[in-house]
Image 1: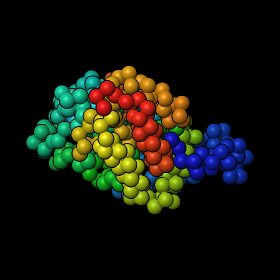
Image 2: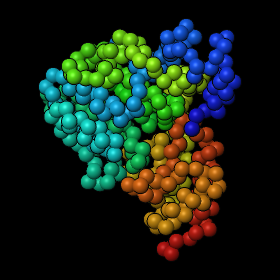
Image 3: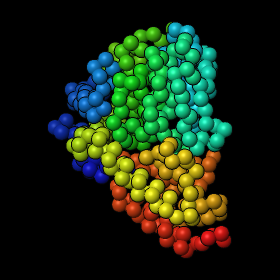
Image 4: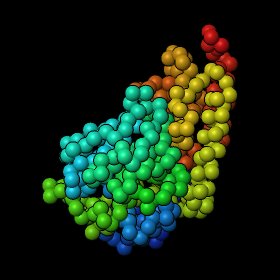
Length: 352
């Protein structure tokens, strides 16, 4: 969901942005009209996340899945080995992609418990010679998240934050690289945010595709080729919306309130349960089940009729999943809780 205020601003500027005489979708990316849009978006994101001066912000393409390859191309450059923490589907895909390029090891995994928690690690779990350690901060499919930054010592920590970026404050200085597809909390699909420390730039493999090369992207200020101009424009509007509300601390408070409302209801009754260990519960993706597959399917169908869309769980886990990203209002979560209560009343289970 995008903030209504952002959509209204985009609507008002759709035919003509400022005095340019054209839509952002019609602008040349090298024109004086687009320059303040991309530089403004970068400045707003830097302020919003308090990105240190020794980090570059890149606007790239191809989604987070492209970064599964771009990361090893750029960072797997000293000892040709890296460690991955497997906590869900996307960290597993990132691991499988990276295996094509070097010695990649699983430092920890929760696969044996169907990813109902994120594995805890200590510094000794990582190989000292690893070029980096990779994790996925929030797991959309399984409804889990990291709540503590793993101690990797001097090994750069790489985080896929696609589904939780900007949901709460993050100490960027604890990471060597953060990347995120935009389509969960930032903008329409099409732009990928990469925040990378300066010392990790410029060491890419000789055969790195140009579009994957962080140094080339940084040198060209994210405009080596035509960037996704409209997506960057929308991202900038969202960044400014967050700044206007008070920043990420305020956004975190709102997200915690929304998540607590839904989790508290789930924990207060016996019709629905959450398979996720409480200390690992995601603020963005709340997974729950009735325990009866037929009821789960009926729930999603009836919810859609009631205007509560996309509540069916991912095919690999089933059940239901409520994605309550930044722009989802508290009233929307309350509407879901009310529907859940009514559905339980209308469709009693035999063991209830």
